[in-house]
Image (tube, rainbow, N blue to C red):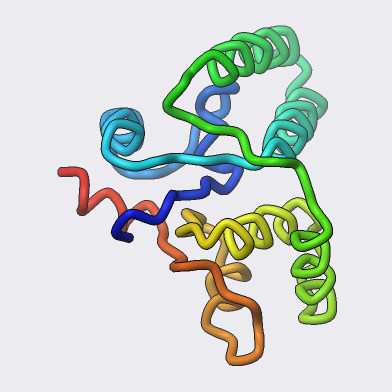
Length: 158
C-alpha cells in the first residue's frame, strides 16, 4: 500500500452509524488504521450509510429511534475527525470511470462512485465487495492503486 491513501468503502463507516459489521477485530484495529495511513472516504458513503440505517429501521421499527440518533452522532464524529478526510463527491473524471463501470455491469451507483474515486485518487480501495474486487482483476477495467479487504489490511495493523 505504500504511501497511497486508503479509500474506505461504506461498510467501514457503518459502525460509526450504529450498524455492526462482521469483521474480525475491527473495533480494536480501525483506530490503528487511522493512525498509520491517510484514510479517505467519499461523501456518497454518508448517503449510502443513511440508506442502510433507514432500511434496517424500516425492517425493525423498534430500532428506528436508536439508529437515527446513532447516525447523527456518528456523522458528527466523522466530520470532526481529522484522521478521516472527505473527498469530492464527484468530478468529470470520476463520472467517466463510473460510466465505464456501468458498461462493465456494475449497477450500484454508490459502488461505482466509490471505486471511481479510488481510481482517480490513485488510492488503495478498502472493500469487502466481491463485485468490486473482481472488477479490479478484470483486464479492461480501470484500476485503483490496489484493492484490499479487511483481512489483508488488518495483518498490517497487528
